[in-house]
Length: 64
Image (tube, rainbow, N blue to C red; front, side):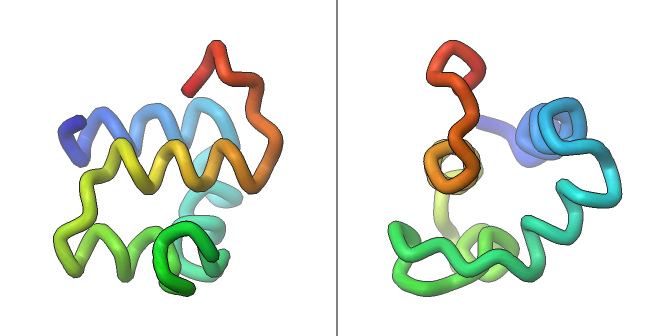
């Protein structure tokens, strides 16, 4: 997944402000206790970060 596609999905699902806050502040246990932004910066696939956020916030699987 491209980073631009990830950001578009993040903003569509959570809204721009909330999505940005979730990406930078929410710690993802499944990503080694890092935030989504930290995980992406360290080389994680944005798709894996997207799935972790969806799982943590009960986004229906059809939108993953």
